[in-house]
Image (cartoon, rainbow, N blue to C red; front, side, top):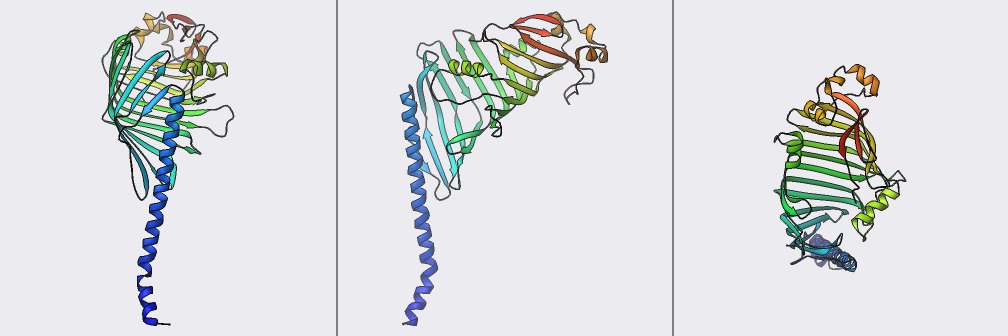
Length: 347
C-alpha cells in the first residue's frame, strides 16, 4: 500500500466528511421544505373546498440549515362568514419552525390587517407595532396557542353597530389543552394593558385607559374545520360547554372590579351562570342599577349574609364590596337585586 497516498486521503477525510454532512443536511432541509409546501398547498385546497380562499403571493422558503421559514407578501383571504362574503388582507406574514421541533411554529404578522364585506356593511382596519403568534402541538394538531401584541389600533364601521374604534397598548393571551381531561378542556389567560374603548368610557364615565384580564378554563372546546361559526357555538352549548373564571379583573381609574365563577349559554342562547364579584369605586354605577352601596358598607355582615368572604387582589382595597352575581333568564342579579341590565339571545 502506498502510505503517502493513504496519508493524503486521511488528510482530506475530515473535509470529505464535512462535505457529505453538508450535502446530507441540504438534502434533508429541501425535503422538509417540499413537505412544508405540500402541507400548505393541501391546507389551501381544503379551505377552498369549504368556500374559504387563502392566497400567499410571492411565497418564499428560507432558513437553511436549521429552520424552515415561510414568508408571504400581502396574503389575502376571501370567503363567506355568517352569510356575508368577506375579503381581507395583511401587509405581510412570516412563519418559522426549527427542524428539530417542526410542531412548534412562530408566526409574525405585519400590519395593517384590513377586511370588508362585499355588500359594504362591514369594514375594519387593524394595525399594530408588533404581533406574534406561537403554535405548539403534535401530529399537526396544535393544542397550545400564545399571542403577543403591542400597540393595537382598531377602527371600522358596521351597519349593525355604526362606527367603532379601540386601542390597546399591550396584550398577551394563551390557550392550552388539558390533555388529562376527557371534556375537551382548555386553560386560558388574557392580560390587556392600556385599553381605550368608547363603550367602557361611557359605562364607567371616565376616559382613563383600562387594564383587564382573565384566567380560567373552557370545556367542550372542539376545533372542527368547516361550518358556520354560530353552528359551532351552538354545538358547544348543546355539549354542555362552560367557561370557568378563576379570576377576571378590570381596573379603570379609581374603579376596580373582579369576579370568579362560571358562565354558559341557556336554551334561549343567553348567558347564564353564577359568579362572586368584587367592587371598588363603583358606588355611582351600582346606584344606577338599583343597588344601594350603603346597604353593603357593613362589610363583614354582608359577606356573611351573601357568602362573599373572599380574598382581595392587589388592585383592590380592603373595603372592596364582595357580592354574589348571577345571570338568569337573561337578567343580571347583584346579590338579591335584579338590575335593569339584561341580555337578549346572542344568536
